[in-house]
Image (tube, rainbow, N blue to C red; front, side, top):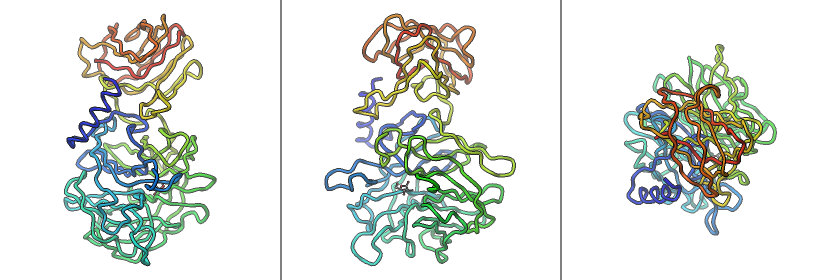
Length: 450
Ligand code: FUB
């Protein structure tokens, strides 16, 4: 299906309020900018509550700065197909917020007693003593809303980046940042503080820290946070035996963005015995790091409870169904020569990326493709631009032996979807290798088995 048809279908489904489903690796969402992902598991499904970066327009937001007017929520059962549930809150719906603040920054959401509590910062309306950022709560019966904002922001809280943690004994805590990282108990109603805000010690004293995210594992409380140790943010963590500290600095979860994105707001979840780190970079906006994109990678602990440093990947997480568009440009590994990943259209980066091959033997590996449901009549479908004589082979697991398919692509200077017979039928989950047999130039958008 062409990208234009997909876009038209997405627009149509938004009009009739159907959720839009997006298949993606990293970044997870490719049809809009998303940042500050707060991921949560509700009823076995992963929900992500990100910020929604947009481009400032004349009279709408500050040019060259963060600009956000609303929030979407996304959910997934497999972390490869994401459903966009649409807008769950707009700045104009919040009674206490400046309706033209465009400062709906990093949110969070937690479940308690069958209700979903969505915490969000926004600039406070008017010129009163509370001007600046407040943090509000909107409540819903479902994780995707509709959310109803409270009339007032939470009293005693001034700052951004709310994060809520509910301990095993039922006590809830609110964390936020405002130069320092603060924490306080929340009342049972989840709407009011139940203790004086406390500056958490002993986190780094120098360099901006923000975006607190606390989780518990094996009785240890992990406070994780972006921190500017050098020039831009990196993800660090500290641990404690009490949710309000004092904390001991432990180390770095993820180094500074190799692309130079200044911020790296994150969250961490456990799903079916695997930990995941959600964060953002500027994949779809390489020249402006206030239009960000959310990502996910697996996270692992050492036996002593320390966190192994995460290296960001393009492949991301999850098992890709063979019938989906397998985006080879989101590879797990790539040959150092003869391959090149570029945007399909730099005038519309939401069209995504392509991988080009121009050397014999150049290859791309894409891990974990599930061929279990592939019917025996399935064909290999390829969306490609190719010069006459281009031949590619697709192997399972190792680029040796008989390939799943060896195809001679018909020449075309425009994107063309082609179907080819498979030479070998496979079931189960496999890593795919796609290799250029001739070195004749070929660009691939996606492949699929249908
Ligand atoms: O998204 C706006 C701000 O950038 C967030 O609140 C911070 O955590 C940083 O990611």
